[in-house]
Image: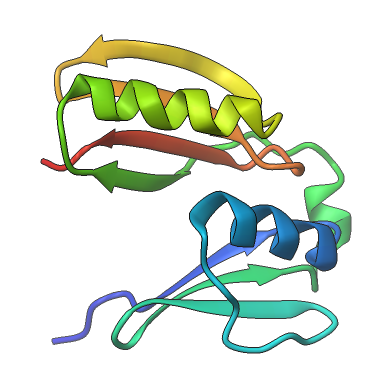
Length: 121
């Protein structure tokens, strides 16, 4: 049986997006190419930026998925990360609040891709 092992994020400017995600998640890319930049997030699993279809991203398509970051700790850990990220000037979509799965917030990358932080399930 196979499981997903590549998660692509469409971006219009791969250099800008690489800087954004490298800083936000404190990670370095595996390699740099003009339109594709992969990051290893677990053995055999890649999170990658792709600008090969920038014209599609530029049309402001509806955002129907999110990049998720589940962090350990209590609600205060989520609030602390929110404070850290807002100090970096991120675009806030949804401020910290409580949901059925715990404390959460949502920001957007420079292309409007959504990033949700929540506690580990």
